[in-house]
Image 1 (cartoon, rainbow, N blue to C red):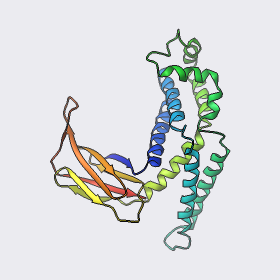
Image 2 (tube, rainbow, N blue to C red):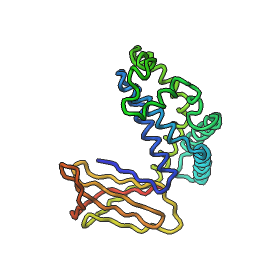
Image 3 (cartoon, one colour):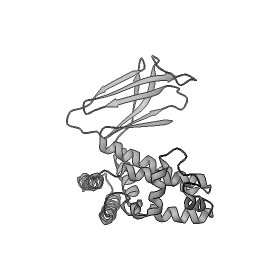
Image 4 (tube, helix red, strand yellow):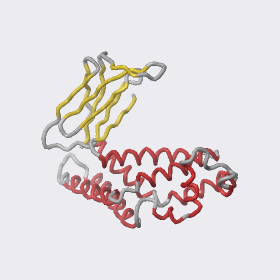
Amino acid sequence: MILYEHPFNERIRTYLRLEHLFLRLAELMRRDDPIDHHHALVTIFEIMDVGARADLKTDVLKDIEKQKHALGAYRGNPVISEHVLDDITAQLDGCFASLQEMSGKVGQSLTENEWLMSIRSRVGIPGGTCEFDLPAYHAWQHRSAGMRQNDLQRWVSSLVPLAETLGLLLRLVRDSGLPQKVMAPAGHYQQMLPQGRNFQLLRLYLGAGMTVIPEISCNRLMVSVRFVSQDDEGRQRTSHEEAVFDLTLCS
């Protein structure tokens, strides 16, 4: 199965981008090659860029409170495990406390590292991190893999609370929806949304053998999915074939 996710609002869009970057960073840090650690640093800088929004931390803290309030409504429900509720609530409380301890914007402490910022200022320039531009960085890349990984772990430590919080919030959002099997009879699917419900995330599963690509648009009133096919040259054309897929709307 191939999963496509599409956000309903800008806040979830930012969360998904950051999650994508954190997953990439974790994979790159596990590797030993200097080029992987170079791209790990680039990813750290991308996380700092995305997280530079002044209201990001506030949005995340508000979402934690909203989730705690939503979970509280399940108290006393005989089909809901109180132990599971307590566990998730404790995780949310821990994330809230960790985020509150973070000072300034995401990655603020890293901006005080002049060496890192010298690399950050050059990565956007084609070939800007050559050894004659950044000899100290060139020397760092020739250190042992273990030393580089230790440095990366130290720099990433200030970002871990945000990564863990976003992972938990997005998991709760994803778990709120139930998949339904739907069909696009001529390569196009539309669904009107019920009034009074605020959806946050659309999840679409396609069979791995299907060659079509979904183009998704959604708002508070309607969901629209148009399927396209792509030839060997990358040119896309509207598909008029019937497509069956799983659709989940998460609130």
